[in-house]
Length: 200
Image (cartoon, rainbow, N blue to C red):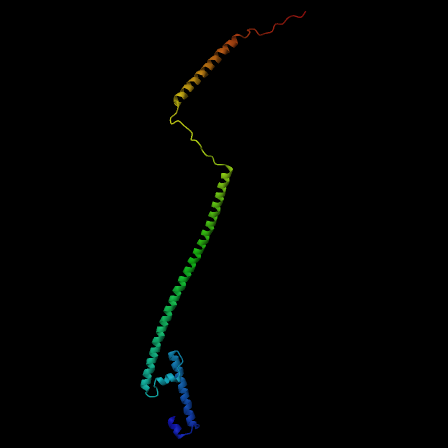
């Protein structure tokens, strides 16, 4: 293109055709580099590769850049995968903590309900106790009773004597009844038939 510019004017068909080919080559090179590297390249980055001075050196630099970019991409991909696994683990742990928090909240609610019921029952019992105390006045023992430490008499002997006396009384009563029955029979009239008198 430099040689043609010295020989022909910029508007000559040869120069225009060569410029079009150069532009098409640059666009193809940019598209290929974007496809390989996964990001858009510009002319400044291509100039840094020194492709115009030495083709072998430029290819080597381009290969090195591609290798570096691929290594960086693989490293970033590994980091992304690691972060994704960590995020999944944290989400699972968070879900477990949420479930435990819900269980703890339900238990705390049940404890509060139980405490409220216990407090109400305690208040009711205290009220009933106070009602009983007002209905039945408290008694106070002024002097303790003087009770003998040992029994006064022999209780066993007393019971035996009472049983013997009772048996004697019952026996005496039965004998008296037996004597009274024969005497009543002998005192009755022997002939109880009525005497009929003739009419005058």
